[in-house]
Amino acid sequence: MAVEYRGEKFEGYNKPKKTPKHPKKSHVVLAKEGKVIKLIRFGEQGAETAGKPKAGESDRMKKKRASFKARHGKNIKKGKLSAAYWANKVKW
Image: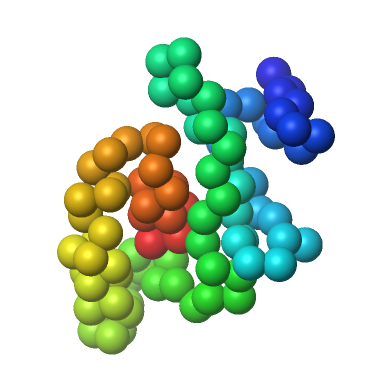
C-alpha cells in the first residue's frame, strides 16, 4: 500500500526509508499511531552508528550503543511518534 504525503512517497505507514539527498537527516518515516500521522526525519547524515548487534562486536561499539540508549531512553519510550524511537529501531 503506497502512501503519498507532502509530495513524498512511502511504502506504507511505519516503514522507514533512507534519504540520501537530504542535507541533514539520513532517514524518514511516515509514523502512524491511532489516528495521528506524523512525518519524522531522524538520524544524522553520514554518522557512524553502531548498527545492529553483531557477533564478535567490539567493546567500543557495545558501549556506544548502551550510551545512546541510556541518553535517549526517555524519548524512546514515547513511542512511534518520536524520532528517538525510530533512530533506536533503525540505526542502533
